[in-house]
Image (cartoon, rainbow, N blue to C red):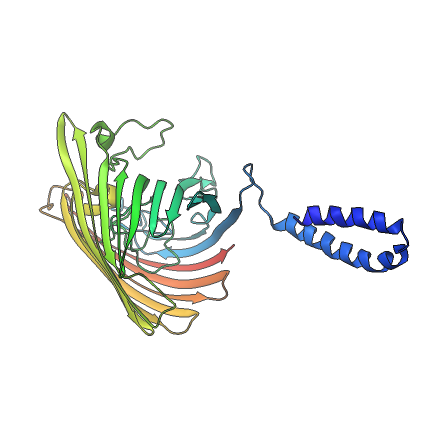
Amino acid sequence: ALRALLADLRTAIGDRRSGPQAAQAAQVTPAQLEMLQSQVADLAQTKVESASRQPVKLSGTILSNTFFNSGTANWLENPNLVDASAAGSPTGSMSGTVRQSRIGLAMTGVAVGEWTATGAVLADFFGGTPGFQTGTAMGLPRLVYAFGRLEREGTAIQIGQDHVLLAPRDPSSLAALSFPMLFRSGNLYLRAPQVRVEQDLGRGWHSAIGIVAPIAGDAANVYQFAPEAGAGERSKTPAFQARLGVGRDNPDAASEAAFAVSGHVGKRRSAGTTSTSWAAAVDFRVRTGRIGAAGEWFIAENAEAFGGALSQPGKASGGWIEGQLALSQRASLNAGAGIDTPDAAAGVLARVRNRTMFGNAMFAISPELAASIEYRWLETRGGLQPVNRRNHHLNAAFAVRF
């Protein structure tokens, strides 16, 4: 629009300069032209153009983690299990990384009849490291979210990869971005391809149902260009999820309360036998003034894809709870604990219990800058070797959002 207006003004100036008002036009229009040229230059610098000419926004988070581990952490900058140490090998680690940084694109405000279409794609660099001497500083990209969404008057239809409907609430953390805090310690979590419908039921109630890709969590823990069908895919049956809640998180309100129940059921086929995978969870968040609390509790069977039973098959139960204190609009203190206990797993599975306690101080320096100091105490109890393995994890995180 600015370019078209600028062209019109140039044409008008040419016409007026050939007429009796040429002197007056020469005094007024150069300033207008300069202003419009400046605006066009700013637009050219900030606009992200797309082939469809629809509005697109670029966003991301540059996240730096500087960390220390006293034990053998499974993931150095964001641990959730304590691994066994090889005999005679030193334990502990210290370093820095930016692998949890994210970058994404979002399309907004596209009218499709009475519906509004949006879409987003987001990737981070937590997909492993290349086989090179300094590969730890060269994180590989990993698809996090990619979905399209249609919304109209309280109804939404979404297709693509997103956080599943089962237990979507997570504890507060800046340092744990690639996987949420307390994953495998009572916090179920999975991103998966899905088709879901969300509906506002009125009076604070809302619901969602979805069909989810049958991911069983049994993929090989090695690089594969063309992954083979796992137990979930071999069932030839999608998984189903649903969520029903009342109340919504509203950080601008003086107080808030939200409660929800969610469930998952799916099939898997392995060694000629078909079995069921299921999970049920309850989550909540309450706050009055500066004091708040949140949590989740679940029971599940064959929910290793969500981190249940410490990412092992079988029955499990667990949950987490967190307390929150807002010191000001820019500073908060958070602390919590979580546990996951596979049922009757002693002497059978590799891990029979996992516990984590955490605390952090988070600071919003500005809307674009944030920092935190976070501590975690992790304890994983082995099954075949019934010993408690512990790790003290300290993490200084700094984030730049754009």
